[in-house]
Image 1 (cartoon, rainbow, N blue to C red):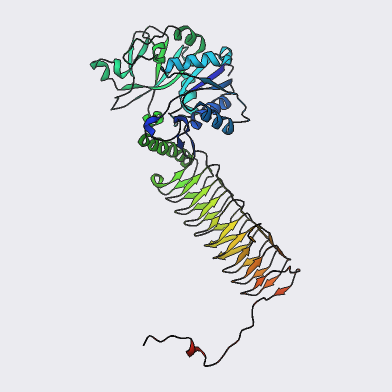
Image 2 (image 1 turned 180 degrees about the vertical axis):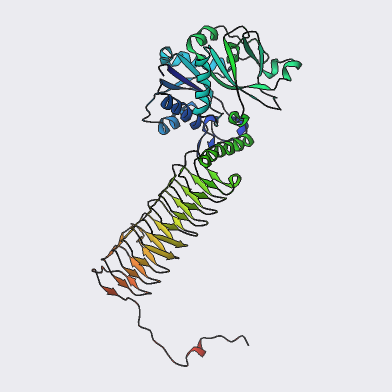
Length: 468
């Protein structure tokens, strides 16, 4: 497609009804921020269509905070992000005028989209459908609409003649208020048409605001585009709507994953962020949380209560119940949990096993390593096929600094052993149970480091307390 596109996101709101100490665009949403989702949808649209263009954001309340977040989150993008400032919130047309004033690149565009920062469920798919409706029908502007049994608060779609108009709730008469097809706030408009119309918009209405909806009229070459799914267009104005929007975002993503071959045991009690990738054949049980930049491979099993955040799981991994993974890598066919804990920097090798109540932090465990029970592995490197017994601890912190433990491959570390770091064991070492190792061991060596047992016959009665 050859058009140059401007995608304008209206993000000037204060969000006082959300009762958060944040400007509205920065309200938390699926471990991101509310404004992230329309921005990402706009960027994805430009990418999938191959159009040239930019994303423009109209900022107002909390301008500096929002701008800082956008710069940090969307740096190094293929398409530029421009910011405009709406000094006073005097309506949507006033916001678009601020964009036209502050972003000179609008002069290069053929089509301008208008999105709202508080409708996060809209994706590039809806933008594409709207764009095709504009182009295929030779229209000057289109508005995304939906039908709702309770249209209160929405602008009504009043059709007639060649085009249509949008009548806001406050300005509608009783007959118009019965209309159930309503305005979503998402538009695609030819730039020439927008520039021609927006200069004539006035604030002669009951709100005293400049409505962008006034660019539509019954005698214009414009049309509504009706979408079947009302949930796509939910706006976020309070915490109840924020919760509903989060749920709709996750469900939309999970339904897509399900269509691609992921099996969810109970979709309504599973929480997968839209940023998470999951391969086909994977089974996800209820009460699983997968968040952030998480990638889960094919044919994995994620059991109930597991939390996976910013982690990579290769194919055939099994995460048993109530395990917690953060910023970690789990290689092919490894087995974690139940109640496993992988802290940032953990890299678990293929076919390795991290068992009940084992915690790993900033450590590399190579292929086939087994740490099955009640152990802590921190700042360590463990070679392939080494077996770690129950109750193992790497003593990695001396009160001031962290130190590394290295254990070679094919070694056996007995239960209730401690490694006083820094310490290094070669390949094929054997450490007897109950040992405290504070010296290096060469490959093939055996170590036992525990006090000699002393047994005194008939002495137990001195220590056993009688209940009588």
